[in-house]
Image (cartoon, rainbow, N blue to C red; front, side, top):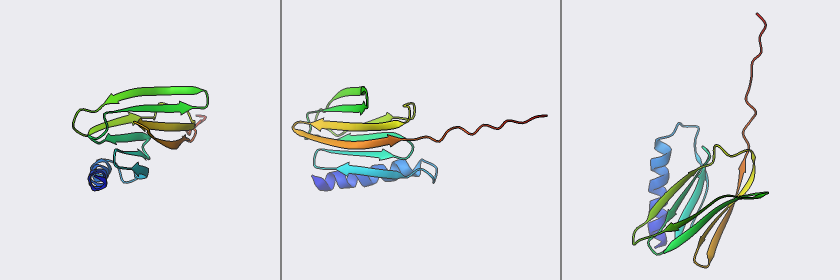
Length: 122
């Protein structure tokens, strides 16, 4: 089953990267026999759950508490979820994905440079 997720991850990464501009690349990922999760540089978290998982709980936690919590049911097929983090403020977050007794934790740092503003006198 690890081969399934490896092939799924490679195919999904290729598909998602080919649709993006060249400056967007995948920064990190974790894959095991039940799930694959990765964070792309365009501030999206991608999650794929295999059919062996009956359900999953997804949490995104900041220093004050939870921003996002979702339960996902899996019904005999792989499920893919995407989460857009671009609206979240700068900071460090922890992504937690739990399937059964297994939990994957990923630290996510969002740091957007201050918008550049031009002031002119005419």
